[in-house]
Amino acid sequence: MHWIAVHLPLLPLEACCATLPAGTGDVLTGLDARPVVLVLDHAVAQVNAAAAARGIRAGLKRATAQALAADVLLAESDPAREAAALRAVVHAALAFTPAVAEPDTREPATVLLEVQSSLRLFGGPVALARQLAAALAPLGHRLQMAAAPTAAGAALLARWAPRGVDVLHGPHATDRVALAVLLARAPVALLPAPRATIAAEMTAMGLHRLAELRAQPRSGLARRFGEGLLDTLDRAFGDTADSRRWATLPAVFEARLELAARAENTEQVLHGAGVLLARLVAWAQGRQVRVGRFVLRCLHERARQELVPPTELAVELAEPAIELAHLQGLLKERLGRLELPAPTLDLQLHCHHVVAAPAPNGELFPTRTSRAEGLLRLLERLRARLGDAQVQRLVAVADHRPERGSRALPVQGEGALPALPAVPPGPTLLDPALPLHRPAWLLPEPQPLAEGADGTPLVGGRPLRILAGPERIETGWWDEHPVLRDYFIAEAHDGALVWVFRHRLPQPPSEPQWHLQGLFG
Image 1: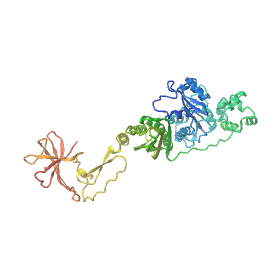
Image 2 (image 1 turned 90 degrees about the horizontal axis):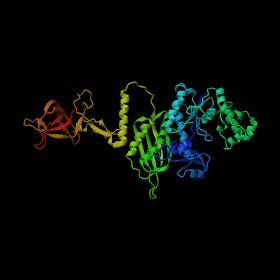
Image 3 (image 1 turned 90 degrees about the vertical axis):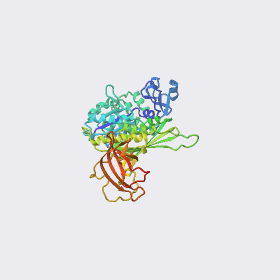
Image 4 (image 1 turned 30 degrees about the horizontal axis):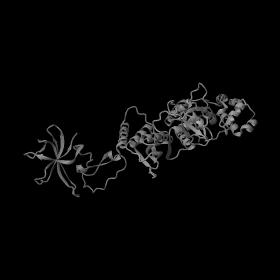
């Protein structure tokens, strides 16, 4: 078996910092950022780089941290928030293998993947580790990775970063002999223990490495530290079978993010929503689907003791997609037209509409399909920026009258056309046998034209030269807008081609006989 362990040493702090307001900079590694301290049981659990530069270390009391840095931001550890962040890593890992172990909440944040059957598909262990790290990058976590023939052994190696070893890929053991050599040099502090003092007790006994620990009598270790310690060692070295419960993906995506500070504007909302979108993409990659529609709900604080209903933003994609930057761009356009009724405290993201992802297509030259995808992306951005009602498409209608031959409908969604009376038999506007003699640009209303002395229509005071026609249209007798017209293609004095018609029956003297209906491009 080939196990890959992904250890996230700073996940609790990273999950906390992800909820901070936008514009705070690099709060994890930036020395000029505000000190951030994660507190667990009134003691410092993790710190960012700015807090470490002030002398704050894990294990100090809360009051001591405040004394060392007056502007320190203290945040309580939240198991639910950290579990949600770890769950997103599990979802992303499921895109590489279905054998992803359910994380053990009693141990440090580590995700285990059994990838023996996936190595050939992804090009070997090194290529798979590289692709896995790239898939996890949008989640914003520091990674320590290792590989071993046992799950517990890979987990221990991933938590250990020996000097001179690439932290990203970590130690690598292909068989139990190589694994035993690596684990023998690992410190005893890596072992998960039921109480925090066990590592100190082992050090006091002169036990610093796992090799020294295994050399001790098993009965004495069991009495002193419990049977669980021996079980962990046996599973790590491969002496005992290691049964794991496999993780599964939910059928729909639902996630919630409680913001560390209330969001006053949509830019801050977008910052928090970006965290949820990254988790949505990880879930979609694990299910091998594309996102067709998602809904963002902003939960507001009370305004003057009155409950403000949540604000919902539904984003529908013209073509299902899975790219994080594309989803963020569409949401940004929608948020740009939104005014928050009250500050936002919580964000919820729901995605119930997905489609199966198509097989990858590595085309060498652009095709009609790829060009169509570019047009769909443009339509999505226009709809997000201008609104669905402002981006429309023309749909042909079975009516010979030019002004009634098409309808404008929203680009997205099924717009049902109203029922129309039956049209008498005859060629339709879409009949391929008809010549292409209709202009693409029709005027909103036919424009009346003056006549010359010989009855020729005039445009700009100059006569038109008739080139083709007439084309007779007699229809609409079943409603209140019948037409009896003869259409002609004519040329204006400047060479422009126009589409004009003349009423077949004589009109009253006050009504013009000729009208301009359209222009040819």
